Amino acid sequence: MIEKTIGDVGLYVAWLLGTKWILSCGTGYGFMFPICLGCCNIGVSMVSMSGIFAHGKAVSKQIELWERHWRAMLALGALLALDVLLQYSSLVNQSLTLNQIIRAIVPAFMGIGVIVIERRLPPPAEFATLALLGLGVGMAMWEGTAVGSPYASMCCMTSAACHTAVIYFSGKLFGDAMPAEAAFSLLGAALACLLPLFFYKEAVQVGKFWKMAGGHAFVVLFISSTVTALYAHVTCHTMTRPDDYLIRAEAKYISVLLSAFFLLGEKSVYTPLLTLGCALALGATYAFKQVRQHSQGSLDAAAASERSHQQQGKSEGILSFAMKSIVRLC
Image 1: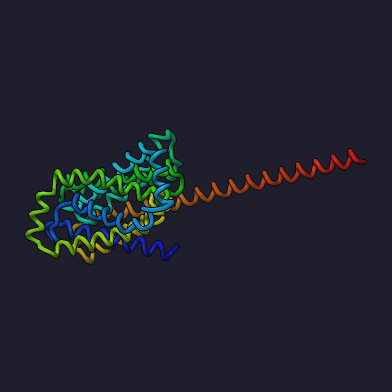
Image 2: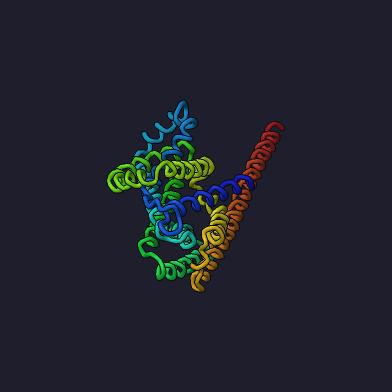
């Protein structure tokens, strides 16, 4: 478990740092084509996983999934494509620090989904931590938008909402863990949504950039897509389980914030208000995770107690039946 978490967090940090550097026009490589980069990353990820999911029983499972849930799969694929598009677009003009603070809003969006869709309120402790999380993210976003790009901040916030929707509805559709074949199929659906946008919006400009940049542009995109493919391999089996997401989310956020601070030189973005919002958001994320784990532990204990009582009742019923039979025989 620890090794998987370290690998997941490390690849997440490498993927985001590389993506930010490639897309950034000021301090990075200047490849300002988020749709193209998203298509490359998803395409290479699918090619690298095709040896596992593009033959035999895996294909049969995918066909069965599409036959049973094709509407849901199309909707989830479109949401995933929108998530990738908006996340990459925001990184063109937004600091990675502010990007990750805004993305920390995902648990609060999950709570909103429970209230709106399931029409039930979270427990008071969870509700309080989610409110603090929303306050912290709002403070950071307000301060960051004042000195940055409001468009990038809205793209990032909408991307977080799409990401939450993918997690929430996938959990409703597939249960606690999404089948790896379903994750592979969703990548294909997302790529099918992004490719027409690429040819419509970026294909001509990418061709011009390619002529000026030469062969090293291919090397940069290939390395980025390889890191993305490795990250996809690690996460495709645990993509949508909300509790797993919460366990690793805070480690990812802190690792990215530290990496952006020391490696990308984003020290200047830490104004007092943004720092306070960041600390409040991370503290609320940790508190929410602890409250969620405590609630889950209580539910598991109650379920175990109920099963014990049921087994005891069955044993007593068998004993009573045996005694009555003995009495009748006598």
